[in-house]
Length: 75
Image (cartoon, rainbow, N blue to C red):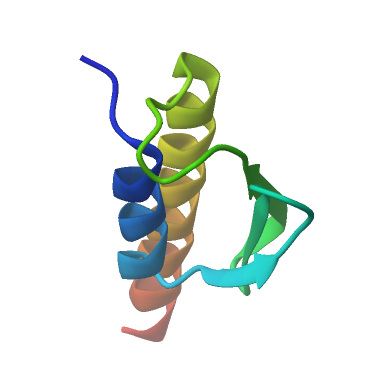
């Protein structure tokens, strides 16, 4: 069962991404440790498309890896 758009937005917020408004139902998300931005489109109650889930989960994973690498370098 696909996640809802609101669930993906919650995941991005918990991972430290900042929301920037876009046109219509589009929102842009940025993170200081992620190169580029993520655009999420759709109403909060809509089902997310598979590519949206994949992109968001991949971005969150990249941020976690960078954070872990920074922690390893500091110790």
